[in-house]
Image (cartoon, rainbow, N blue to C red):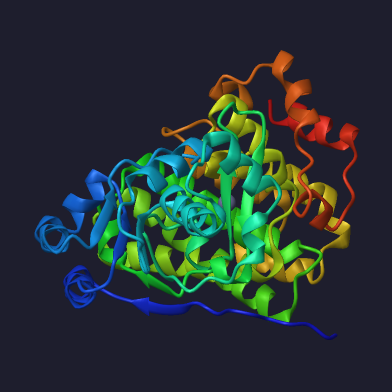
Length: 376
Ligand SMILES: [Zn+2]
């Protein structure tokens, strides 16, 4: 079997004080810093930011909305008053994806831009005419996104009608800085949803059409870690060791799907998030075991996948996922306010190129409808 396994992002495991020292070192750069107020407090970055601002070399974006749109990218570009040469994004998938959107658009957008022209540039992939020279440091603060090692970022159309993306080899972060310490304060609901996102990345990557021996080993390691440590971290969220293990689980899953992409569960998740506000991790995990039933016969080394979960069949995996969600969020569509009458519209919006056609089994509209009715 011939295959490529590419990773251009440097990975660093760090602690908060080491990261603050790094920020001190880059104060002569023209920095675009994307982070939320909560993250500024969690990293105790106020002093660093003041130094940056005194030198008039830092633009900071403190408000990061979940699921960034063309409007959020415009907001970043409006705020930027110094042409930046270094971007530091600290946050979950939304902060890192927003940074990718801003980097891509900073090249191709002229002086007079609008939300419409930004949207057009994304759809027509105008940024691909350029080559990035901006250094990009991604610091994930949830253990789940994987965006710190992928070359694509999800951008949502502001009127909630479409999921878009920016994608280029040069949009993969130059460095990913993993700081387990900052995930210790993560709320339980976010811990669960981002952990389930990472589990979906690992599992979908395992059965993806593009999976290969390296990605499958990474997937299995990620699944073993998440299976062991997600219950522990939910029970004892302050335990550093458990948080650290979840960060590795998320990173291994990220490295796996950065090379293979995700499949049907992510494709089905997009309209659930876009139209019904279901958090990304729950929106992916809700169909994971039903999609697994469809895929089962086509999964390479299927027994190895079950072994990584430490289970003997798909029902046991489903029970285990439900057990983790118990008392936090029931994992059924109706529990997220998605009614039976909404399902048809969701079904019609589930086919995303690059995801659904990467599933090992070709799912029809009827199959997707059947999957969604089973988890309604
Ligand atoms: Zn995901």
